Image: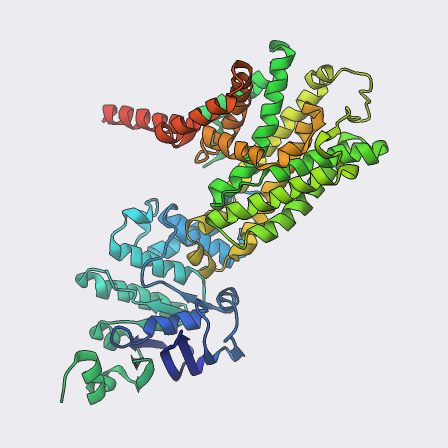
Length: 247
Length: 332
């Protein structure tokens, strides 16, 4: 589904992503791990079109999207959340999700009938909030949510875009440790139900091995390991990079 | 909210009352007062358009005078060059098309930037317009401007009639209906999915882009709609004023648009309307009291910003909310 070929990104003279290649299959849930500064978020930004690649190629559904605008990529089915929550702070929780649906269904061109008139879309938005377990908070402003709920809302908005491929940048950071698995359960169940492919940046190794089919280990801008999470975790160089274990 | 619920709200009755009052206004007010109200209503259409950008898209324009001038000059130049087409049914569409074209061009230039850069660009293009209106005096009458004759309305000619008779007759009702139509249309726009999209761009343009909204294009659409409201207001104003001069394209007038919107309160939908009408009175009385009227306007602005940053309508809205929550607390 997604093919990344020898992708390179420089910021000024600093090379952040070395020539990197990997791919993600349909229905596959892949995690991306690596120490701070490895370039994980940069990689997500490159795939979402947030920043432009210096070299290499990104292919999605057989089409070259290396130079496509973020807008084109979203229309093709690539959606993302944000590591640092990125919400519409002056609109209610429901409104945050509903505007995503208006955008997906091409209703944002409609300028006469009130937004509440589109009942099916409002119900669908409430349905999505239900899936993510925050529907009772639908009338609150994002500022009144806990950090964990904000993350969940951010993910729900990406989910609402009805995409084929979801990029999740640390969906559980800021979520209370006890709730992390509950949040991941809801997110993964929702993704599987919609048969989306997904690339998740994650720090928690338990989550990586419990929820994802494959893991990519990124260090200093290069993929150094790629495969089954349980097997990869046992590799010596991976242990050294992720946990600082020498031996 | 169901329709009947909406209708049963006290706000609706207040609007109905104001509308009925406005219907009988020509019988109640002396003509010069009525003309002030009329001029205020045209400014209200203008500032409603302006506020679509400020409140709902997050863009502060310091050049909306040029769009107002476009509508007014469209009427003036039609009268000058196509007197046989000088009918209000033709003039209004011409003014709308002219402001559509001009705001499409101005908007295309301005929406590439936001915040202060947008404001300055808008100011710059409006001053280009001002310079053209002054310098192309063969076409525009230069700094003398153009005289606006009374138009033919619905096939009826008003030739030979005094302007004040025209303004207190059928034209007043035409203006009133135009204003009500504009207010309803704008209210619909800001509450529609399109309006919500604009607000999401205002709140967070990065995220808006990431949920598939073409941010720049939607800002451009907003600019054009805003410009057409301004052009419409300008066209109507030209009939009330009887004369158009390039001053309405100058930055001073653009500043007055900002001022009236802030005076009424840009955070509230009705704010610009209240601000526009109040401003008309404030300016007139300030001018009649002293030649240093700008001092009065400036001083009120300082007081406003320091004591009532949400404007007059915003202040009322906050007061109403406070009373409501207090009485709710009293019941509990």
